[in-house]
Length: 299
Image (cartoon, rainbow, N blue to C red; front, side):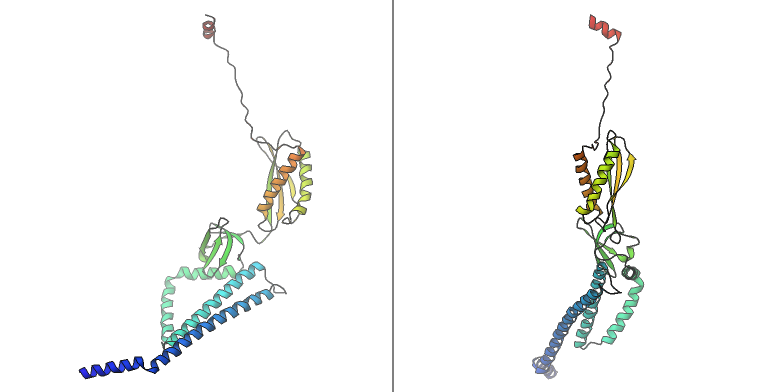
């Protein structure tokens, strides 16, 4: 019995120190390194090919917009990376002489079982597909979705990322995005209300503002056309409100609105037209002293 144990130990020691084991380990390690290097090269080449493909789609009858290009290019590159990484993982497992067929079959059965309990995941993926396919919004768009408002940072098959103007990142499952307001597709409208005092000359104020609006397109290239003065919008407690609208390129209405207010204020001040401010009028009542007080004052 002791001799058998000793013989078995010697056999194990010879196997560990023998050249066959280390040659097999070396071949396996070299194969794994080659798989990783080839995978890295495929991803890099694939990224370049995808970028060139979308660059060519900017022109021609089947051209796509820049916002659409940014979304699809990132999605295709991510999908390519996932496929290459998964294939490399399978090949590495084969290097360890594992039965890949049995593993895939077991993974298929487990995936089917998990799928019945992962309905939200399936819904997110399907919703993400239709968001991309229907071009509901793209990377770089300014949107409001599920209570989150900001610029779209990333669109995936499962989640979308929206960055607010204050820097927060909102991560939304695509299945929860039921309504989207996209501010970046069509031109925007800047709306500016200007107050004129009741004592002011409305006709003269309109003439001054119209002359200013004719100069605005030459000063601000974000304007699509000359802004319009719609007229008197409201009769307030202490002012007459006049409304100005200006069509701008998408997402430029905020900047143009601020510029319009500044320009109108400076021009009205220059022309001596008063912009009213809140006023408070106080009345004082003088009361005559009653008869008793009057007699007391005489005494």
